[in-house]
Image (cartoon, rainbow, N blue to C red):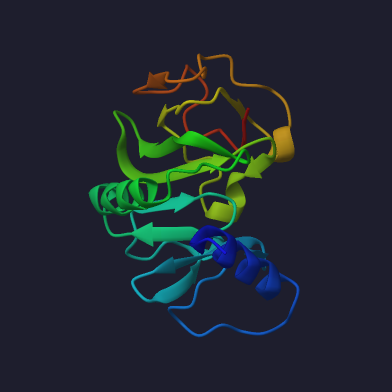
Length: 179
């Protein structure tokens, strides 16, 4: 069995049982008590309750990991891509990045899960987007949870970006959809 299949099998086993994993074990990023649980420097954090010292978090819908810097996240993500070479259909080949500040500054949330509405409140990023970079898949931004209206009318097609949101949309995005 390949390492990816082994990890996914472990994730399924963990999600279907009530066992608590020790720090450092591989686990999915379930939503618990309103938030996504992420690994950060050997500990677990509930992103909806705060990011602590993390400034960059990445999620593929199975795992969520946070880092002290965007550069540290990029280094880890690049190493992972080089070692696997297979991108599941449920993930976009390159991720959507949402930034808390204009000009791609501040904390960054990187998402790649496709074909589901992603509620940013679970990641502690609700109404926090001030700039963005869209990866290889078209994305849609919404004012409400689970794709609520209105829909952001700026350009969010594949490989687009904006150093600031359209007028009236700064810190307003509550959910996203990656096509």
